Length: 236
Image 1 (cartoon, rainbow, N blue to C red):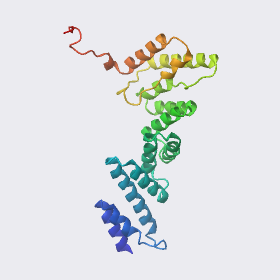
Image 2: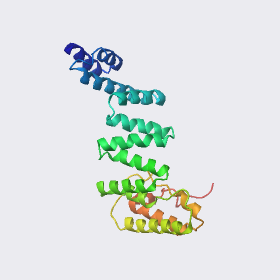
Image 3: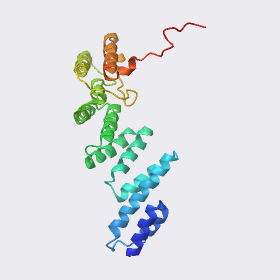
Image 4: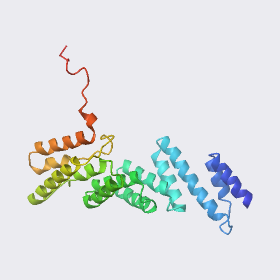
C-alpha cells in the first residue's frame, strides 16, 4: 500500500493529476494511507481547476473546485477560487459563504477580505462591508484603498431624507479624516470605490464629487499628471 501512495504522490509532483487520482482511488478507506490519498485527490482536483481557469473553462473549473471541497472542505485556495468564479458569474450570494470560510481558515487573507467586502457592497450589506474595510485599513496602515472605499459606501436606495443627509455627512467626514492621513493608493483603478448612488439623492453633488477627487489626488498624486503635448496642442 505504501508503494501505491508513493506512486500517487510522484504522479502528482509530475503534474499527472489524472493518474495520481486513479492510483489514490485504489487505496481503501481502511488503509492508514487513506487520509493522505484523500487529501492528494483534493489537491489534484484543485490543480486541475487552476489549469481549467487558465483555459477560461470556468464551468469545468467550478466542478473541479467543488470536487476538491467535497473531500477537503477547509481547502483555503479552492474556497477562494470557487468564490471568484461565482463572482464572475454574477452569483454573489453563492460566493459569500466561500469567502467567509476562506477567512475563517486564514483571517489575514487580505485580498479575500477585500473581495468579500465588495460582495457585501453588491448585496447592499454595507454594515458588514464597512467592518471589513475598517479591519483592512487597520491591518494595512499605509494603504488608503480600503478607508476610501469605506468612505464611499452608499446604499443603492435610501428611503428617507434624513438617511440621505446622514449618509452624505458621513461620507464627507470620512473623506476629511482620510485627507488628514498619509495613506497612499498605489493603483486607484483597481478595487476603487463606487459612489454613483449619490446621484439618486436629489442633491447637487458638485461639492461632494470635488472632495472625492481631492481624496484620490491625495492618495495618488500621480493622477494630476498631464500629457506633455497638451499645453501646446491645437486643432488640426
